[in-house]
Length: 208
Ligand code: 6SG
Image (cartoon, rainbow, N blue to C red; front, side, top):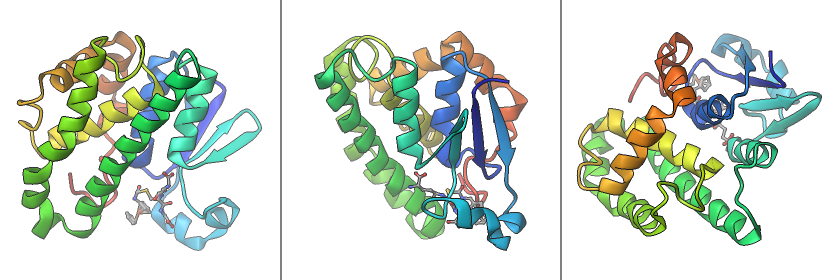
């Protein structure tokens, strides 16, 4: 077993990107899967800084908030840019992905039946921003010339959107190529092909 432990529900949810990142960075990690009935007892919730999961343990160090966890992994595994400016741009892109992720989560959990079609129709107005950055950088990554935690977050959110709408990247060649190349990275491919990944639903309410 490696240095990391993830405590989370049995979904991809807010752990999708960090798992892909750990896999690609050659890390092994332990999963503690919490079922909802246990969670409702409240004992674990009471120990969480914001009363929520995921939790990452790095040795004896505990961390909450999925994007803080991605940043921590970025620092640990040299996936946070080569200097302060690159790091700032990576932060900016991660926050941009978070804005899209929040819209997606709201649609999935609150308005799937009534809002899915409108969401898909509006999606190009969000994806085009990432397409422009990816096309401009020309390296196949958002910032610099190797994957940062923001790339893993974008990649994972795009995989989820391809499940929602399989044609959503057809008009975005740089994003399409990004997804193909990330999917083909050997350690990512092995992880995405694993039962451990495939058996987990994307979201906690069964919608996708
Ligand atoms: C839910 O929202 O999975 N954490 C969630 N929910 C439980 O009591 N800003 C932070 C971050 O880390 C957001 C954390 C996030 O980025 S993630 C949490 O802790 C709580 O608040 C989405 C997810 N949902 C699935 C799930 C399984 C058990 C509880 C939530 C399905 C939905 C409700 C019951 C079963 Fe369910």
